[in-house]
Image 1 (cartoon, rainbow, N blue to C red):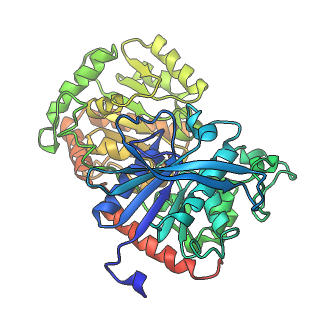
Image 2 (image 1 turned 45 degrees about the horizontal axis):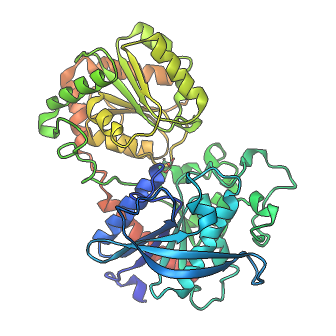
Image 3 (image 1 turned 120 degrees about the vertical axis):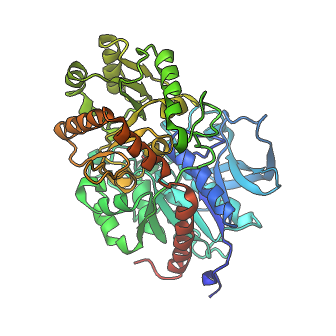
Length: 501
Ligand code: GLC
């Protein structure tokens, strides 16, 4: 069979709400840049398709017109719900197409943000349907579509219903990628009445039907995809259990022979402390001591006392419940009152976290600092200057920050869950192994104790530097994971030809 010939180059289309460098909100946008790139480096033709947002820099990126007046009907082929879109294309310097954009004035162009509108169900259904209508007409066809998160969950659904017998689309396999199971649609899935419950079986309603807002896009993606993956092996195992399954654990468990986990990587050229133009003092594993210059710059910039030997803990994160900073509520003051360290917080998110950290800044001037809006370059400054980065997540599908931190010699302090468990090895002082500090239970005693372990170890520079060196040498580049993805794509294609289990 041709797909299994070793050197078969695949056509792959990633569909997502965001992709760097065009639009990035979080980790998903980063992966939608770095994974297709890694696949292209392996010789595959990987492209990405996202909406065309108003905030995209059209001066910087030259978009070409790919297809004008793409007509999308909202469900069955009557003319009641007709949406007109265009498809734009971005080719790189070498002339190769890297990205497509679905253009629609009303649903994307007029919106300042990527997420968070009351008609998001329509916006994402339109994207899903628009991608498939585009592919029907496109000469270039993917062997596999990779649909990411709930926003694209209707792609597998449409492919296996409306377009099941469409000669242009029926050969395309679909992989559904879960980057975060806790968002499943427009509503909070923990509080759905029996009447609103979406079993995933009913036909997808017309876009103007309010029932569309009640669909569980995530469930539908999982149900109908040829294969499903998530972004770390541990999270793939966790989500079939009630504790992490977000009420979809039974479904995921039923489909577990098609459920895979591949750890994300990071782009090693972009994240290179030896070359990073965003930091003042470049360094590498052979001259880690140069980091202290960056620490001083960071302390100065944020009004922290400029002290080389006081450990500086950093946070670079969305400030949401998932990230686990609730563990600080009962512990931060006791830690700050009893131990000498500094804390730098960068992130935005829920008001309760932001006001909590703001209070700490007021109470502990010169020791706690924060910046609560998104910033492009500040994360690099913190990665290069902080001694340690805190990621105590309740759950973490993968997490990229711990990998970036290790690459920059900032020792991660993490909870053992999802991708954090798969990437950070707990420090063992007897064996002198480990790349960070890891705690298991999500409770504030475990958290507190682990911070103390890190602060104490920091007092022994030789040991601390050993951890930094091992962390910096650990390999989280995409090379291996991208190869695993190629194998998964091949598997997805072969599963596509078997009936859905
Ligand atoms: C989501 C997850 C995060 C993951 C990222 C990229 O943001 O919460 O854990 O690293 O997607 O896959």
